[in-house]
Image 1 (cartoon, rainbow, N blue to C red):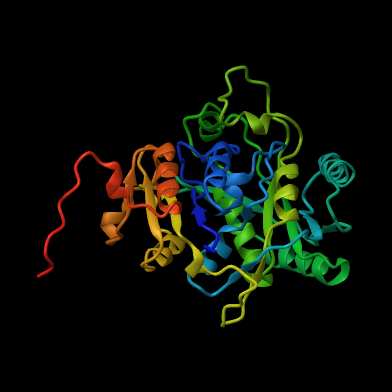
Image 2: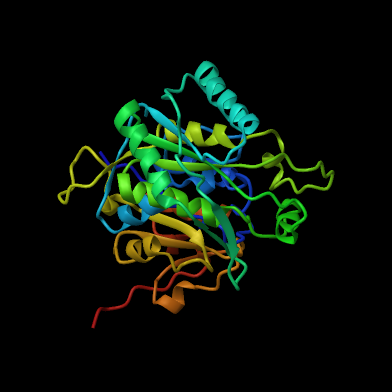
Length: 351
């Protein structure tokens, strides 16, 4: 019996990816890849579509910092039937906006049967600030990270949560050029970089699944919104997709010796990533494995310019995700890619 064919799908956050740089617009890619493999490992940026989501039984929802640790072999992934999700609110969220999010959480309990704990409010406003790098990529800072960590610790220790949804108040600037461009499908998600800072901090400190949903005032109606960013226009909160993802996110195994009950980096058969975004530590770790194929997608352009050849990474270069799915289908079937080209070189004597 062959072992499960495992694929990691990465679209880095906040770098303006043409596909996966908006509100859950990489979900169709994830669905197709999941249908072509036994196990898909991907991250919230790929799976989160605000109030839209799509549950896939063979997909593992893993925060980006945890993927890096998994790729390095430091952490394993333990699939679960369900998690008990704690919600942490930023104290600076207005009461009416907090109520909207609580109603979304209660709806997830009543409609989807999710297991949520009582919520925690941070003891100080988190003070999220947004930044943009010279490349155009987004990032951000938190003025009060200790307040966030105290609230998460309270949620875990007092309510028994083993996965954390953070809802932080983000700055409102509906007239900003970067937000206008993003809503119209030509810019970088201005929130994604700061969201990654929040979830990375929680996962690194507590080693539990975490994802973030920003709290924002509703934006003015714009009939010209891009379909790729339209999911974020549907309501008052982005929380539903986060709760669904966290509900079955794998727990992290941090023992030094791999256990047969979990999933470890040596079991990954292929990694799919945008061609220009190969500088992340996770991808570099995966590239060190002789058995893991790195598949780079050219048409998913980003604001980065880190190509595999620049880093000495051997990859299978494809134009589209459709071609990438073809590659993993052939590999999963145990066939050589050489058989699918019109010219096949004759075998030669090994000298």
